[in-house]
Image 1 (cartoon, rainbow, N blue to C red):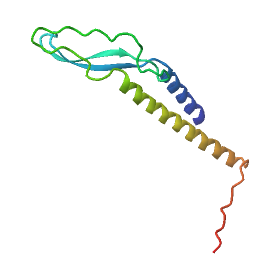
Image 2: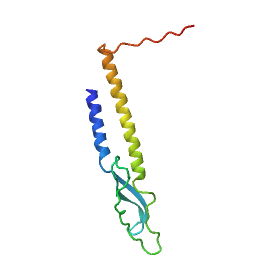
Image 3: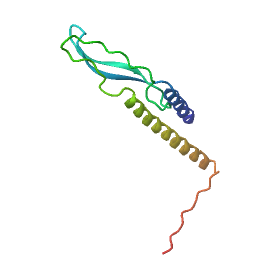
Image 4: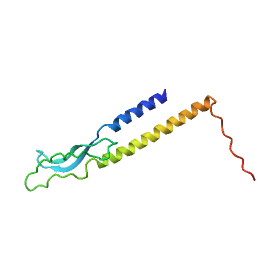
Length: 126
């Protein structure tokens, strides 16, 4: 039963990995928001984890022009690269965990059924 749950979890992770990601990139303080200016971010569409490029070749979303005398909004980091990198790390950890737990479970089941003979340790000669 736990093997089925683990496999279902792995399938959910696989579906997440093949779907396009999004990145909320900070762009600075928006002075057009009234009554109080505030820090804002812009959602950028990213590629899936299996695409070689982190972001499609489409242009980045347009940023709101700011009132005269205020600094313009600008992307504070390269969109999608951090999200793409971190998501690939998470996927690698998930795959390693799945393989480790499933391998251990198969080994335990095989040992219980007696299909695997225990290997005796070699005796060291003194």
